[in-house]
Image (cartoon, rainbow, N blue to C red; front, side, top):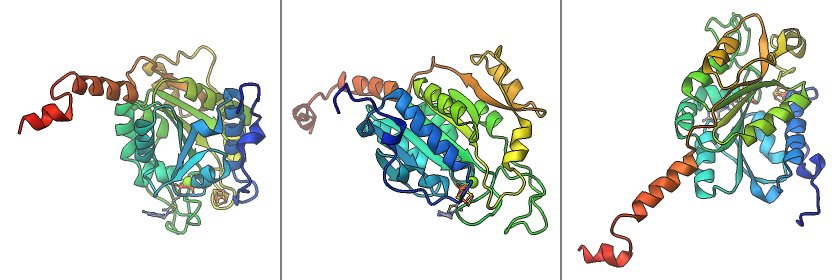
Amino acid sequence: MSEAVAFKAKDYKNDVEPIWCPGCGDFGDLAAFTQALAALQFDPKDICIVSGIGCSGRFSHFIKSYAYHTAHGRAVPTAIGVKAANPNLKVFVVGGDGDGFSIGGGHIPHAARRNPDITYLIIDNAIYGLTKGQVSPTSPVGMVSGTTPFGLEDPPLDPLPMLLSYGVSFVARGFSSDVKQVSKLVQEAVAHPGFAVLHLVSPCPTFNQVITFDFMKERVAPIPDDHDSRSIDAAFRLALNRDRFYTGVFYRNPGLATMEQKLEHQRKLTMDREPRSLEQLFARF
Ligand SMILES: Cc1ncc(C[n+]2csc(CCOP(=O)(O)OP(=O)(O)O)c2C)c(N)n1
Ligand code: SF4
Ligand SMILES: [Mg+2]
């Protein structure tokens, strides 16, 4: 499209209607995401959304962009491949708490080490929604579900301290009811050069009667204005605070080399040494 055309949020929504349940928290994230794309004025042809399996994994079906609906828990490595193949694409990963922290949990620390310039939205409803309400790694102790008829006894993972200790270079949290804030967080995550993870608490009114919108509204609070998001110590202090469920940018470290920079460096090192051509290579044999 020509430069004169300004994209509006609705221009990023395709004709596929979400089949999420009425009141699903995922709707807020979708609205926030299209608003963020409009603020960023990304051309749909430059965007690729790689999604996992789950209700949240359907996200990629509803946006006008390139999309790749992957296998359960494999969205992150797939997105890394997409970004490595075409660094010019704006690559997003979208998936649930089960997708990201159970079956796909082993991929996040290695993505953090590589630091690809990718934005990852983890849509956390503390339940397996698509498969009709089994406990997930973020479900609270005591939760009664299809798989825990007498109540869950295992404690939940704590996503924020976990992401920080993995060395993820941008860590933020939002609540899907606050569309404006989530939109702003997506924009900040995109502006960050490196692996940016957004933990988006997004209640599932159909299967989770514990982590509800009302439960969350009583607990969320914006990160205090004087928080220094460059300080990992300060980020941990906020993330480990049990009295408040803070939302905003916990941590950012723009000083790390990105995966794309490291790949380019390796490419140059390879090109600088012999053989520099097929002829030189064949001459060795
Ligand atoms: C390899 C594999 N194992 C299990 C499943 C079944 N399965 C589909 S979605 C899902 C969990 C979804 O939970 P979450 O990632 O939290 O997404 P939500 O539906 O809550 O958005 C599971 C276990 C699958 N599709 N593939
Ligand atoms: S089951 Fe839960 S997460 Fe899935 S669409 Fe319905 S409300 Fe949303
Ligand atoms: Mg879930």
